[in-house]
Image (cartoon, rainbow, N blue to C red; front, side, top):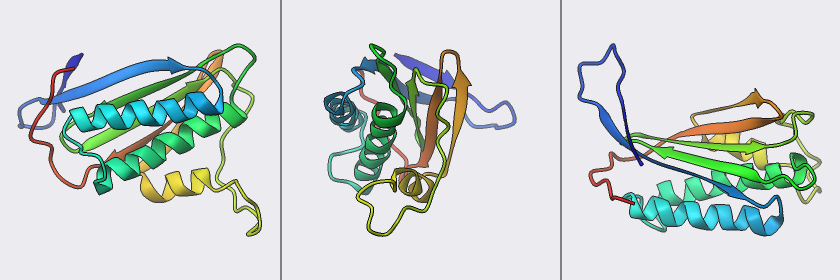
Length: 155
C-alpha cells in the first residue's frame, strides 16, 4: 500500500508513505515474529538492518508487542501491529483486546527483571500514547528518523 499525506499548512509536496498492518498471536512467539517481520519490512523500505533507526524501531516494536502479550491479551484474541513510515517519521501502533489495562510508566524495583518497557518507549520515542478502541486499546509511539529516506521500495 502507498498512501499520500499532506499537511494543509505546508507548501511541500505530499510525502509518500509505506505502511503495513498484520495480526499476530498473543504469545511470546507472536511478539518476536512481529519484531522480526517489522525489521524486515523496514529494511525493504530503506531503513537498513543494524542502523540506529532500525535498531531503535525494533526495540520500540518489541516493547509494545511484548506489553500487548503480557498485559493486554484476551483469551483467543490476537494483537495487531501497524507500522507507518514517512520520510522523517515512523509510527508504530499495537492494538490488543484488553481495554481494562491502561499502560503507565512506572519506576520498577532496581532488582526487578522486567517493568522497564514503557520507560524505554518514553525515552526513545518522540511521543507515545494510548487510544481506547472497543473492545481494547492501541498503544502507539512516533519516532523521528535520523535521516531522510530517499528510496521507497514497493512491497
